[in-house]
Image 1 (cartoon, protein in one colour):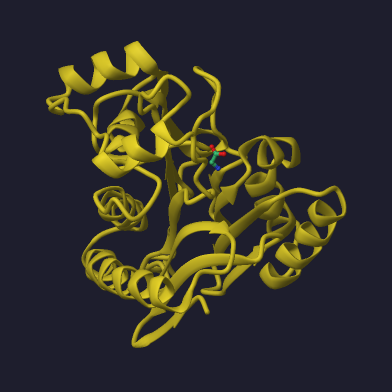
Image 2 (tube, rainbow, N blue to C red):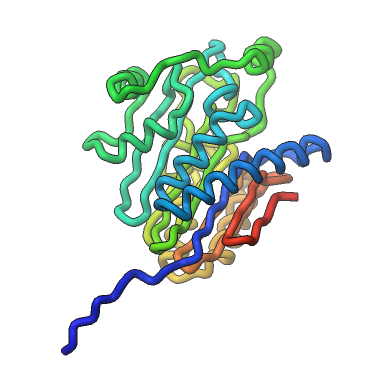
Length: 289
Ligand code: GLY
């Protein structure tokens, strides 16, 4: 038999981001958010072209965390005691490594710390342990609370579920997902979000999914894993989302998800009134309406 030096098939890189599921926005706010998403999408897409799906989703979520318009990183919602506890995870679909941080205080980019944990034997760390790891890894601590977040907390105002996330397919056909959140806002101290669990963020060689919405519902539905598994079992990506969201809607679940598969398909679904998302594949871009 002649030896074949087969290279991995080249794919057209694909990136999708979300900025949470919730209510329909007023027109002015929608335009502002679409503009922000466009610049983050394009910056992270450049990264995707020159690196891997894992690096691109981490970078996209890093940029979303830095924008106080979203409930992640700087300006995220505060918990009942007025403190900000952030959670994030990343998953590399090509080696099935999941890593994350849970209820981390005083570090502005939990997604970077979750990414750093990809190389560790203990890959999910919570509060003090996560903070210790972050400090030892050279991340600087700082208060991530903004004046607006403190004012909302004083008024006991709950945010919508504006968790952020990204999924990507790179030119080598590898998939990855990343998700980050400040939580629901005004929640019980120590409550754990879905965003740092496979229910909220999951990727394999077949499919990557990032979820948003009411964390307890997402966990009960094992949302991201369920969609990925359906695709792995042969279901078309679009069908996997449609079927899953019909099921979770019937149980009153409030959530949304973005997804990409290894064939370069992209899909979104939600049971809420709207899902804030944007995707790009080459020159094609699509934004939520
Ligand atoms: N999906 C974010 C949360 O409920 O914490």
